[in-house]
Amino acid sequence: LVGSQASKESVLRQIGEAECVHLATHVSWKLSAIVLSPGDVVDSQHSKARPFYQSQGDHTQVEEDCSEASSTLELPSLSEFLLTASELLTLRLSARLVVVSWSHSCDGWATADGVVGLSRALLASGAQCVLVSLWPVPDTAAKILLRAFYSALLQGSRVSRALGEAMQTVQHTKHFAHPAN
Image (cartoon, helix red, strand yellow):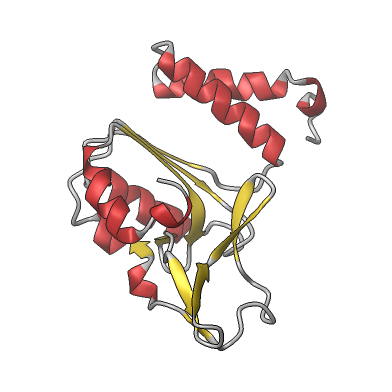
């Protein structure tokens, strides 16, 4: 599910069937919630629907510009697009792996309570393994890491080994070989 298709309703309908779940989205660590798409929001001034999310380069970002997200937008309530840890606990997941790759611009740094809360909820719901990014990394490094990680998984590596191999791939990439990177 991508963009406005990744609504809370759609995710809840399909997440229980998935063997591997990759959530590349914003996370509210303060609320222990995954931010999903609210779909289209209505601009009451112009009476037209427009996407709440805007694509910027290779990632999607919630509109944060107050001049664009004026009071004329009719935004849905938070419960319509936030998937909370308590809601995750009610699910029955069959996923062997859940990856939470969050945008680091939305809610600052991950908090220990937020990471533990979401991870625990996913594990208690049936996920066998949860992988969460904890700090911002350059987009290029993240792409290299995830491509190598999923390639290793597809070749039969266990999650821990695939992650180790992917980390080494990034470390051996010329641009990221220096410890400061």
